[in-house]
Image (cartoon, rainbow, N blue to C red):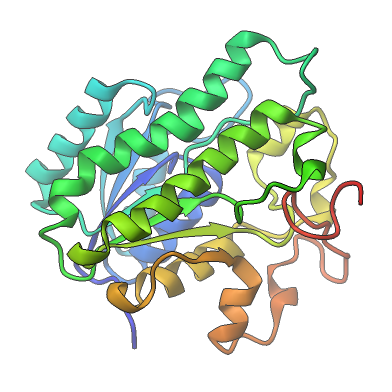
Amino acid sequence: MRTLAGKTLFITGASRGIGKAIALRAARDGANIVVAAKTDTEHKRLPGTIHSAAAEIAAAGGKALAVVVDVREEESVRAGVAAAIDRFGAIDIVVNNASAINLTNTADTPMRRYDLMMQVNQRGTFTVTQACLPHLKRAVNPHILTLSPPPSLDPKWYGPHVAYTMSKMGMSLCVLGWAEEFREHGIAANALWPRTIIATAALAMLGGMIRPEHCRRPEIVADAAHAIVTRQARECTGNFFIDEDVLTQEGVADLAQYAVVSGANPLPDLFVEGFGAG
């Protein structure tokens, strides 16, 4: 039985959505979770804070540390990492989940939104990993897992929203480079992306473009993430995993259990075949 018992996970954006689902899955093993996110008080449009997530993690069987971390700010990240080491003494796994989305074309993308996506998605992923790296080098079976798509130069993924696509592909290029850079240290670097759109509170930020009943629950990504970070790091690095493929490899036959609405046909996510033009 592969388990995360006693492992410490530093998860960005863990106050809600996929990040929280990954945290709760690890908590059921008895893991230590650093809930690293900005939301210290309730957001006016999105439910959940680092404190409510920490309470759920504790109820699920894990140990939680809620820290306010803005991945755009290096000092904030380093302070969060220092707090994690002070509390748990180690960081075994980094999950780069924090992300900003704005699905607009070039003319309709305000530069403040462009900057936000680049700072959170690409720069934030790099900053968090860099800050955690000394501790990963000392860990047993260390993993970096980044929530980003398989890298692609297919124009159909860029045309509708150049800025967002560049920011997500930048995260994936980090994974590509880290798998090679950290190979000698035995640190795994992998990416994970959903086959279908996941029902999270972030859907509300898209103005009702996607109906939740045609989505899957975040638990499918969480179960796939658990399967990846419990594998042997030296034997599992440089992969761009799709959630349902991981679970199929693990022998999970019933993917319907993850549907928001039983029997509904889930929509494919961005950056996977079946979505977009072409």
